[in-house]
Image 1: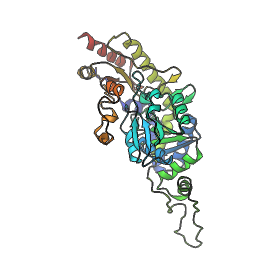
Image 2 (image 1 turned 60 degrees about the horizontal axis):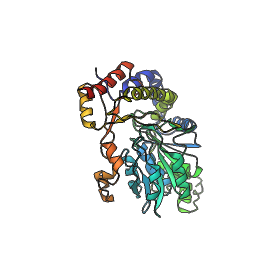
Image 3 (image 1 turned 30 degrees about the vertical axis):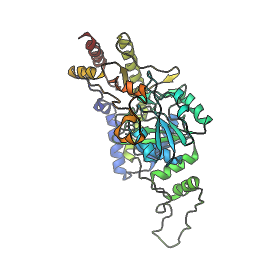
Image 4 (image 1 turned 90 degrees about the horizontal axis):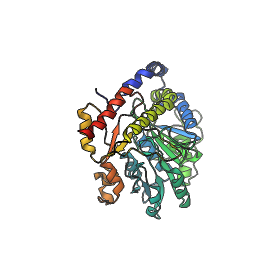
Length: 397
Ligand SMILES: Cc1ncc(COP(=O)(O)O)c(C=O)c1O
């Protein structure tokens, strides 16, 4: 049997009719960027997460950069984050001009260890940027308290965690701003790139909207007055000048072009209706893995904190012979992944930060141990049984 780590064609078949008719309708409408498809998706997404605002962008990476810039973070600032994540988390801190400061992770949840954050706070620290890795929220109660005590912002990297929650509060509603990715492999995936920022703050909302569109027009003027304390007024209308448009061609910030396409918004809007069902199916698959693998002494199954609802973007267990396990599974036709093979503090791109092996021992250890198994909602019972028996067979060789 062959079992892929992820097969997006199956989900496509399930939603095909709705998606194809929405896409054709959108193509015929002549509206390709912005417009009601995007504003409707933003409104529904904000309602789903439980925040006042949601700003649609063209990737999770852009969401992170724009959230950082919207909070005024840049040159000379430090942002505390985790080394066990996708590169973009810390890359964007550097892109904003700030310095990522890495704090080690918890061995069993793989999330930033909130108990180790305070010792890394300096006069330059501006924000804490936790990642809800593999779909499990980080300890946001503790992180929020630390941030409030030290007057720091919290930016959630919720790119892998759409729909997850702590108690009845969803990931994305805990920070000053939160960032989501709609990369196709994500729990809510577009048919291309896409991203979102959520926030309760009217000011952050308007600044993000300005940053996504060249810092132009009314949003740009308001954003500049908030960020730079400069009072801006849009130019008076010029009667008789048909080409003059103060709402379009006046720019107030050096910013970005980071809009979500209308077609992607239509697709995501349809998929949002399926998200809780897809996440429930992932949760059931994870439960079956946990039950089946908990009696394998060589394996540590992933831990879930009390009161937390993870959405299992990945199912990652730990074992001491990760590479051999991956090769064995592959020889049996089972797809697996090794997220993440290098902790960010040891990535070549971050050489300039001066970290050395041994600095963050837990993150380094788990990068040598985690194996991700197929956990996509459409995985069949037979396929999962085959994956489980293959994992067990590895130890029976
Ligand atoms: C934790 C994390 N942060 C950031 C990103 C960046 O998102 P995108 O690929 O949409 O730019 C991703 C996903 O790729 C991610 O998994």
